Length: 154
Image 1 (tube, one colour):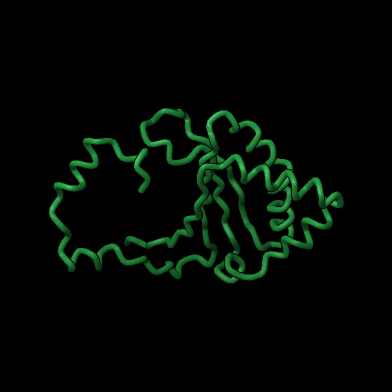
Image 2: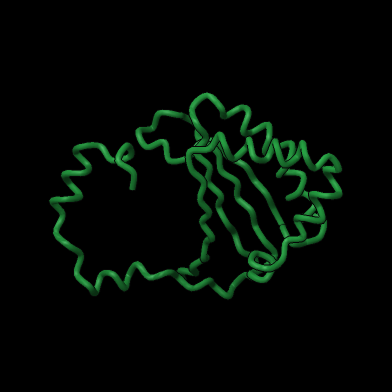
């Protein structure tokens, strides 16, 4: 965790907390995906540099969202949703933009995406596309992906 995300009080609390017993570590093992549904969901989080949020969202909408929509037409992706937090000063500032993608199944999530062919077809001016996509990532402070495993609690 980076220094600017830990306040002094939290840092003291973390340091003062006794170590977790080895038995407890097992409780944090990755959950297996429930067999109840084939589809897989991944949350993609972005933390955009201060002052560049509108530019990032515009570039995402211009270049990446159309690619995801094309993947929906092929059936690889079932749903795409985008989110921003309600407030920007919640004390953590972990993320400023999130995308939730539901894939048809694990194979669709981890297999070939066909993205390169889609990008060549949708954006014949590859020089501009590459320059603007590079800019989209230049204005990020952080990006991480969170594939979710659904757990059936009956």
